[in-house]
Length: 279
Ligand code: C2E
Ligand code: CA
Ligand code: CA
Ligand code: CA
Image (cartoon, rainbow, N blue to C red; front, side, top):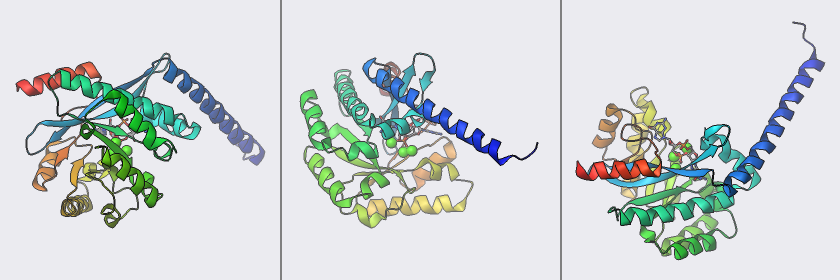
């Protein structure tokens, strides 16, 4: 084909318009989703390697779109962040998690930890601490079972702000996990000034095990440094027996991944927990 810069520019421009239109549709749909109860939480168990018991679950949002079917968060969280919709969605997630936390206790799983993801925008919402306080107060839950997961970038963006918010919520009993650890630029020395009780090793390192020697060294270093700061470690994305064995040898505290269980709807989780306690 002839190279015509004019045409290719128009083509590119058209692409941009399509994606801007798509973006707006997505946002409008998402607004309806929040109102119309199309959002749902899935729950992925986290296993304690010492006791082999389910320590807790990570709550992961799903969108049951009337036409597109099940939409995964990577497809709509970025749009929700940009539009600010992530703020009300995020509070809905915490409310829902609190309801499930109480249900879990009623069903005979009183110590189960519920972990919820907080996005950058949510964490920097001016009313964050007071809104979370109101939600957990209204739900009347055991706050020590509620864990909030934040990424390095959300936390390190403004360390003073992070320290203040984490301390306030920590005083109410809520605990914090540093998510996707190893992918950002924070140094572990930052951690000692924050009330973080858990560190989640990003799944990219776990999945590099057996492929690159670096992954082993990095994971070993993260676990030993975290433990020296009295911080527990969860490895995410564990899919194979080999990965599990390596993590066990390194005294990783908990694992999460398809090897044990995929994220699942609430009813399936209840069955899963029932089977675990019978085993
Ligand atoms: P994340 O917080 O790092 O969550 C872990 C992701 O890894 C989940 O993807 C989970 O399904 C996936 N995963 C778990 N085990 C394995 C495994 O063994 N192999 C592989 N390949 N993947 C595994 P998911 O559910 O698609 O969520 C993607 C991201 O969306 C999350 O990453 C989180 O950043 C965000 N997200 C999910 N729910 C929420 C929410 O309620 N609020 C906010 N702000 N973000 C959320
Ligand atoms: Ca997470
Ligand atoms: Ca993660
Ligand atoms: Ca991630």
